[in-house]
Image 1 (cartoon, rainbow, N blue to C red):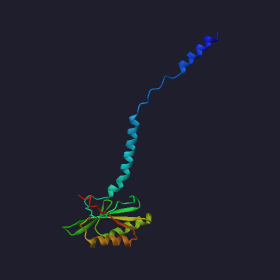
Image 2: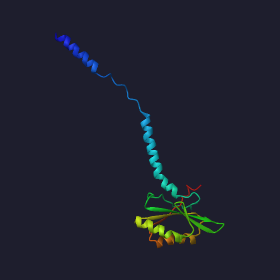
Image 3: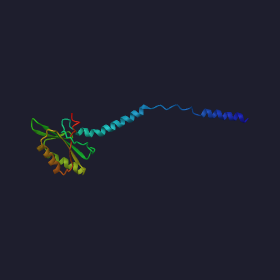
Image 4: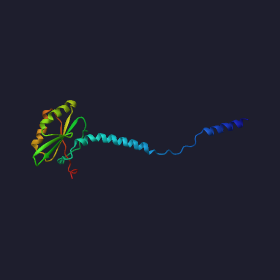
Length: 160
């Protein structure tokens, strides 16, 4: 009699046992979702540096140009300086706003310096800008207490 109960137990175990698993399939949809989130994240981070540059500025060439070692963000302000050879005048562009003279920059520099003590100014001056005009921008930065001024240039290999 023990034989029939043993066969019953085996048949019950066979019914509850799961069929052998097949190889799992790779799910592409979650991978695409993750990649799109990463793409949006990196695009939003890099947009601040792109917005501060001005395409009209032709940077001077320097053979000893080095890559920037500090990330952009709250601690720096990009100052684009354009030069008009016909009118022999300069224009200062900061975050899309145009300033005619360097005297208008003092309050901007002071506000940024009060918010961030390690504040720096990145000067992107056109290669045709006269030194006299550039000197007024540097004097405004120095008069506001800015001690870290960096000039943006390009390397010879990058300029084509």
